[in-house]
Amino acid sequence: MKTKKVKRVISEYIDYKDSKRLQKFITDQGKIIPRRITGLSAKQHRELVRAIKRARQIAIMPYISEAVK
Image (tube, rainbow, N blue to C red):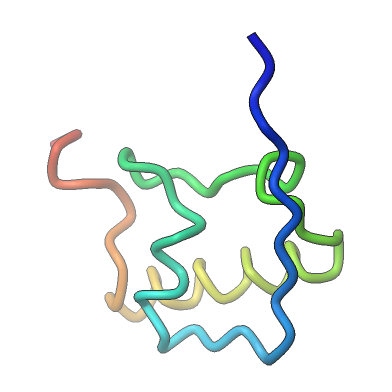
């Protein structure tokens, strides 16, 4: 079964403090959704991953979900 590829474009800067926007790119287990599914460009996905990792490091976002614990 194929997954539907969605073309997403983020026009402005990806801020690590904006946890609601970053939550859209994380699964319910807390994993980062791959670029082939999100439809982001390589540059945008690198910025997104960097922002998510920064948010996790300063405890804005959890490393894993509460359901997994």
